[in-house]
Amino acid sequence: MEQSDIIWEVKKDAIRRMVKSGKRSDGRTGDEYRKIEFIEGYIPKSPGSCLIKMGNTQVLVGVKADVGEPYDDSPGRGNLSTSCELSPLASPDFSVGPPGEMSIEIARVVDRGIRESKMIDMDKLCITEGKEVWTLMVDIHVLDHDGNLTDAASMAAVKALSNAYLPKYEDGKVLYTKQGENVPVKEQPVSCSFVKIDETNILDPVLEEEKVMDAQITIVTTSKGEICAIQKSGSGTYSREEIEGMVDKAIERGKEIRKNYW
Image 1 (spheres, rainbow, N blue to C red):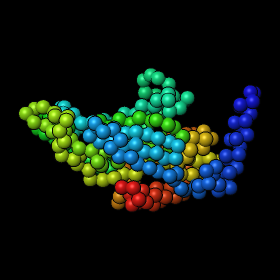
Image 2: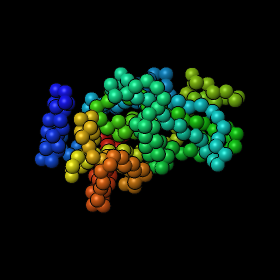
Image 3: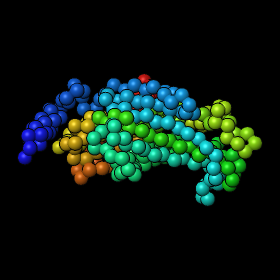
């Protein structure tokens, strides 16, 4: 075993002991978020954008809007498309190429939270039923990876959409240089991710905590305290009591995020 591997094994053991004792390397409690900062309108030419700094994790989300055809099963509703790019500059674990498993999972969880919370009034994105609707494209770009990319991406996406607008649409043409109506936002879902390390569940893990986790669960809630999305990964298991406790905490933290940042 190389020296670097030995050092990491020692570090993993230290992280596990610290979490078990109710402590974390950055001084937080187990159910506390890192410092969060939102910078809205980060991309001047985008109709909606937001950069989030969650500790040392940084994620940039841009929103674009274009006119296209509706899906056959929803002729009177707009479309939503969410993608995630993991840049090699953000982490040595990321590489250039087609979207990988992590990228796809982040995009799906963010997309599901937006859809299932009914955040956007998709009916109002219809221009001509069966022919023309607005398509919202949410592009997630991870700039610096230090854990909990899902919550960072979700919160930045919600912020970007909440302040986004549609371009002008006149005479069958999209005028990208002219501002039209605001994106019809009805809800503000909040994503809360927990990781399980041995028998302890902690909120908003940093990268080192993610690397020693046994399982992870993300819970997205609405302003009414309802669960609109949930995603579990990892080989570890949860008891019913653990899940109920994390749901309660996700609802509580969701209210705090909306009060302090929305």
